[in-house]
Image (tube, rainbow, N blue to C red; front, side, top):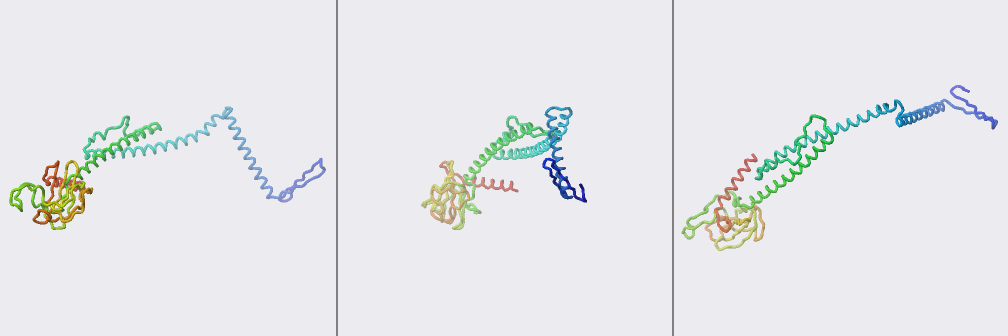
Length: 319
């Protein structure tokens, strides 16, 4: 029975001989209708899902093509996603290969500076395919192969550049152990190497080094790196220092006023080791500088000239 916006339902139980009345208002009716609709929809979805799966499993007519149509969209989306990622990786691989070409070009020049054959740097590892060239969509196998070749090529370049670095380091060490640094900066050469009239005895004698006249206290720098093997007061050389540079090469610094190193010290090229003086057999403040190779005294001038030429070359490269 309906009265206004309410529904009255009377339930009669014949066995118990009694009746029960239910009163449903408008709000309760709407809630009940909503619940019923939801339950109906869920039931329909469940039924559709069961029927669809059962139809595909049992190969009912029309269900297999329908399943292919439903799943085709998902497959296409996955393939598109994979293709986009493969293309992005291929572009990145191309950039890496282009950078590898730049490294190859730089490595050839550095190898030449190190005295190594640049052709050896160009040698490709076995199976190298060169730069990845687009023309068709790249496959996973092609991408994997190209990345493997790039990895192998990178390893070979690392080994080669390590060898170049070692060679350049050896060359740098050798240069640092050759007396090419001016021992007194800016000083002119007074007496050169060779025979001259001895200023004390007046007789002709071999002058075994170069003299650098300078004020007492002027810094004296090591012409090359090495080990101090002599530091003593000599009757002729005065306060004297001898430095062993290896390969039977020794430099000597004489007549110093102050000494800042001792026997056994390891010194660096350009390190201040003493100051100009006039100790020993000397007529005025100056540095007497000698170079000995395999026990034979040499003219220091060619060594110092080589240092000046090297400095000029490096300056020109910087410009």
